[in-house]
Image (cartoon, rainbow over all chains, first blue to last red; front, side, top):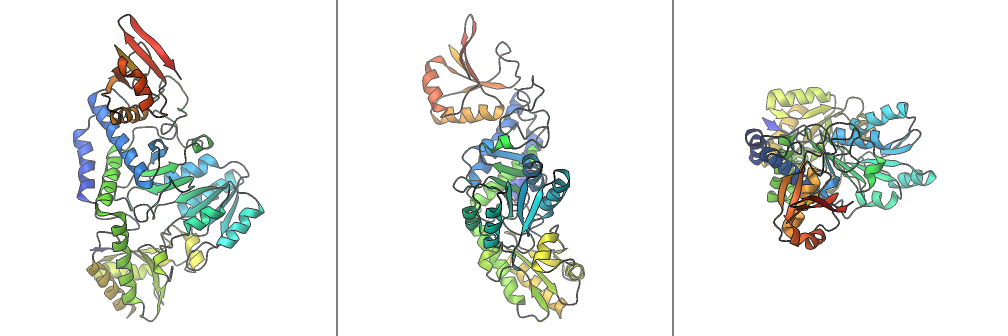
Length: 380
Length: 80
């Protein structure tokens, strides 16, 4: 199979990741922070070192500000549900994934939020002037930005957004960004960064991260409450990080796998990974761009896009194209709305959606070439 | 004689251990003595002679308390 659904989950996982997961299951007796025996201490060390590694990878000064979650969706829920109060004004780009949009939809009813979707152009880029104007009209509690679109690969202009956001808190959905693009939360005024472990970081599913700027923890109500192994004599959740937001037995194998994924990225080099992925997307695009009846979405200037390509063949439903790619050519892609109906409305592909090709580090040149040939044959 | 540093959770214990090691100390992780806290976690034990330098090595990482482990019992030296 030629796997071009890397934006859904990266595949294959590096062997180091598989080994790290297996090693915790085989060799670590105990749960982190729960006992004082050697096994539990070893588990605590794995968790601690993973947290330090994630912090260092994204430039966070203090690893206490790294919260492990079950995935980017939980990280986003933690911020949105924990921060927003009755009547708050929230801005979000019109490229958001349902992991933001559905939470906002729910909270809009529950807490009577004022939710404003900021216009983006056909390529998916945020209209900065409109964004600034809306921010100036009335301050907002939160601005949500999907840094890299899972539909088009569009990379939002982060520095420009940071320059205009003023006092408004910024929540970055980094699900498609972390592990692909360099991010340095230590030197940028990013308040919250949510990301998953199983996409760009090569970890397993079931683990994600929320980074929050130190000091913001008091503004967030926890999403869940329970045992932490600390302050056990009290019936209240501990106020300090990370225990304020982490309870229950952590997914140690998953977290160890995520840490091994970061080691892998650092061994190869983030820039090299990004160049490889985007080069494959460029080659694929180059082979198909002259094909009549093909509509390609997303940035024309591919420097402003990640290795995600969305397209449609005139007269064919995306699901039909994906089915033929899979059955006749062994090419795995994702068709439809990609859990991001707002993004498809923005780029003009709603409600049918698009066919999405997403490339990763483990894809080879031949994968891009064969996928292009297959697509051309179907477009015929 | 030994001193025992208490921290709010294992995360901070391991952060402190890292800071101590980086400054050349040899911290020993021990179960929190029942006499000083009901917490069932870990604490850090160091030589009493290193106390002042060790506190500086923590660079802003605040222990919850520091105890002296003396023959006659535990004595609180610092309370946050």
